[in-house]
Structures are given as C-alpha cells and as structure tokens.
Length: 568
Image (cartoon, rainbow, N blue to C red; front, side):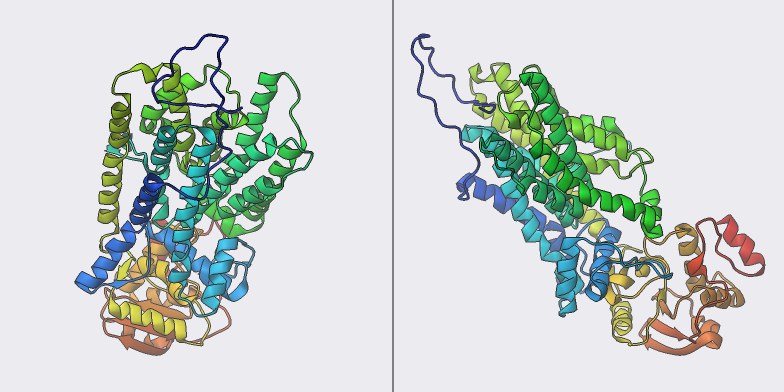
C-alpha cells in the first residue's frame, strides 16, 4: 500500500458491510504520456532553450559573436567547456584556469563522453549542448514517474507534475523580491544540464528503491545503487541527498513498523551512491585546485529565503506529517525535505560548499505532501475545488516563469566584461591560439581568460575565481593593469615574464602602446584588427614563476608596484 491522495469528489458513504472494489494502484508511470503531460514536456523543452534563443537572436539580429554559452552565469559554462577540452586530450580532467601544472584526476562520465566527441572534431560547446535534451527528457519522465507512483488520481498526478517542473513562488533574495533558480528546474536547464541530469537520476533512483523494497523476492536490486552512483558523479549534492533520504525513510519505517527493516538493499544503495562521494572527498584533499575551489565557493544563503519561497507548498505539506503513510514511498517523500535541510546545513559549514544545491527538486516531494495535507483538511468537500486548485497552480507557476525568463534575458544580454559575447577580432585571435602548434598558456584580461580554455584548450593565468586560485582577485587586477596601461612598462614586462605564460592575448580595450611595451620579450605578434596575440620568447621556466605561487604568496612585481599589488 502507498499513500493515496485524490482531490476528486468524495464517493457516497457505504454501509460498513459493503466495500467498493479496490482499484489496483499503478506501480509507476507508463511510457506513453497523455496530451496534458505532452503539453508540459513541450513547455519544459521550450523554456529550456530560452537563454539559447536569446543568444542566437543576438547573433541573427545584431551580428554579435557568441561564445556558445547557454546560461546566465557564464563562468560556470566556461568551466564545463574547459573540462570537456581537457577530457578531449587526456580522458581525465585537469585545471586549465591556472598556468601551473595540475594533475589529470577528475572523472565525470558526461564530461568524458563530451570530451570524446570533441576529440572527434565536434566543438566543445556543441558537445555540452547535446546534454540539454537528454537532461530535459530525463527530468520530465523522472518527475512523472514519481507522481504516478505516489498518487492515483489523474488530477493529482497532473498537479504534482506541473508543480514539480514549474513551481516558482516569490521570496526575498538579498533584499529584493524574486524566485530562487535552484528551485526552478528550467533554470537548471540554462547551462546546468549536469545538475539537472543528476537530479533526474536521483529521482529515478528513489522510485527504483521503492520498487525494489516492494519486491517480495529475495533478490537484491542494484539499480538504485547504480543510479545513485551516477547522480553522485554528475553532481555530488544529489548523491548525498539520496543517501540521507534512503536512511531517513528506513529509520521512519523502523519506528512505524516496530521491526528491523531489511539491511541488504539500503547497504548496497548507500555503498553504490557513496563510493563516488568518497572519490570527491579524496579529490578535495589530494588536488590543490579542488581544495582551493571548494574554499572559494563557500558562501551563505538564508534558510528563511528558501522557506519563504516554498511556503505555499510547505504549509499544507506540514499537515501531511501528522500521520504515518502506509507506503514506503510516502516515507521517502517525508524524508526528502528533512534530508535537504541537513545537506544545506552541512554545505553551509566548513565541510562543504554551495548550500543552495541541497534544495534542488524540493518542490516535488512538497507538492505530493501538499496534496495529502489538503486531503486531510477534507479539501474535496469544497465547491469548485478543481477551479481553486487550477488557479493556485497558475499563481504559483506562471509569474515565476515570467520572472525567470525576464531575469535570464537581462543577465544574458551583451554587456562589458560578459564573455558570452566577444568581438569578432577577439574570436579570430582565439581561433589562432587554438590552431597554433606552439604549446603554452595564455595571459589575458579576466573575461577573455574565462573563454580561453573552452575555446583553445590552453591554460590561462586568470579566468574564474573558483579555479584561478590562489589570489584570484590580485591576478585579475594586475592582468588588467598590464593590458590597460596603468602598469609601468618595466613592471608590465617583469610581470609577464614571471607569469609563466607563453602568449599574451590583447583584447580590443588594450593599451595602444602594448606592442612597444612587450617587444623586448616578444618573439612575434599577430594582429586581428583590434585584438592581437603576442608570442613570448620561450624559456624553460620563469625564475620566480607567479604560476607556482603558494596559497599565501602575494603576486610580485618590482619596486613600487610590489607594494601596490600587495595593497590591492
């Protein structure tokens, strides 16, 4: 038996001696969606290409040069493109956002597949975009499977599917009214397809676990463990969440049934899901780049902001916690929000980072619980109940969709320093660096540095303040000073020599006398309109390579500039 919630009109009261025939509860979703579900899939697919459409429109209508990004936080997409470029050469990924040597030790299956495509000649940005339809379809069918297995009535399933895919309620984010992107699956499709795919995989794992637990045979199902392991590799927060959801549900079952739950299935599931997490733990201690990136990504996010954002679902969902569900999936559903809060707390501590990722997908279990809570309040007795529910669904989806679309269009629009669009001359310079057989890293301005690894496969001195560590801010400042002319010529040459770079990529805003400044240390210069590539005179290694600076070091420059950088 599993929890059954139906907002349809109540059946007539029968004599205790007369019982209606029991309908067999669907074991899960079939693979043939109805017209309503296909409409939601179509809407989800259209929303998933919204940012992509905005970017392509800039190319068509204004002739802009697009770097192939597909999101509003471009440095994250550039990180994925860099991983794909690295995997295309070495299978495992190294950090291309620093000039020092870094180990090829990161394995992620989706990146490896995209890297293989790029090695065959497919551009990295296309290799990344190919995951979008996979993630979108997987997310739709995962939410649908969860809704069908949790609920019986067609209306309830449609409500959960709609809210699980499109819920977005207003909250206060850093003092402004908005909706939270991580709670809105279409936002994850805008450049975070690995995270969206991980979420879908985790939901499938929960459904598979419930099915395996309902199986009365002695066989142990490995499917939840395999799905959990994949979710962990794609996005470790979802693996952590799955483990806590499974353990929490088994604990609740123990309390409810007063007997020891089976141990083999949870053991296998936790083991399969946890091994990749152990790998990430080792990676964060053994690889300096991953350690520094984890520290750089630490931030806080108000739990009150999240609770306010899900309040319309949370209030009726809390009522569902008053009683025990008869199905195990009901226990899994109740454990999910509690596990998300636990992951949020851990991620906000010194142990992990990026706490908001813990709440991805939270609206799905809350939607199921909200329907059950309304049933406990005898909502089905109200007149025009279906109209009221439909109105509530519209209120808590359509404004959020409009807000997210508007915000995405504004954020992705061309602006100074935003590397989603660059000049055609800068693009030609990057193509030149991609084709030049001379090995070596690149020194350039911050926003172009973010593009260099994904476009050329080369290392860059600065590009993102997650991976260009240590001293990311100082690196960005002094690189800009070299290119904009605020650094004296002698100090600029010294810095460039000590950076460990083989090339200097001058953007279209660079100082007009840069060629004269770098000529004593340049082997050649190739101009591309307003951009240029300087090939520096090669030597084995700088005497005091800034690329090898320890975490506590300050970027060095001679004379007064040394003091200036230290104060920066």
